[in-house]
Amino acid sequence: MGRLQRGQDEVAAVTLPLNPQEVTQGMCKAVPFVQVFSRPGCSATRLRNHLCFGHCSSLYIPGSDPTPLVLCNSCMPARKHSAPVVLWCHTGSSASRRRVKITTALIEGCHCSLKA
Image (cartoon, rainbow, N blue to C red; front, side, top):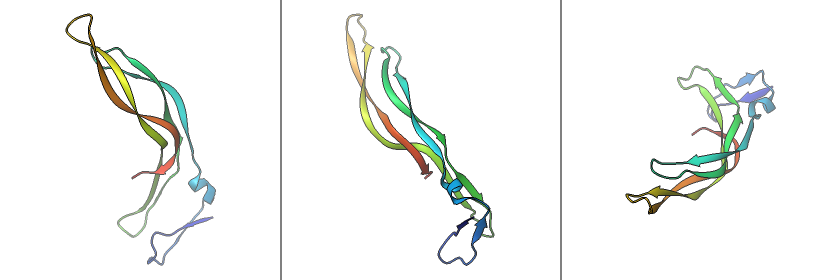
């Protein structure tokens, strides 16, 4: 059985009928997909990226304190970096195009993380 305490100065502790491993256990992974970037009047650009998918533990313990103990994790990027994406957009004339640069996050890995 796991035990959770709210703060150092609180005397009461809560004994939970849970396996401590179940409280922290989750499944969160980076799933590859092809992301399409487009804007009106521009050619679409495809980029290999990852999305974060999975389930993470959450917990709500009521108490006498007006603020209950809440633990809410979510599947979020663990490693990511910014990458430029170039779109080619049509201008007034049919022969000319202009380059539009946008930025996206490339996800490299995911994990269960406490929601801020």
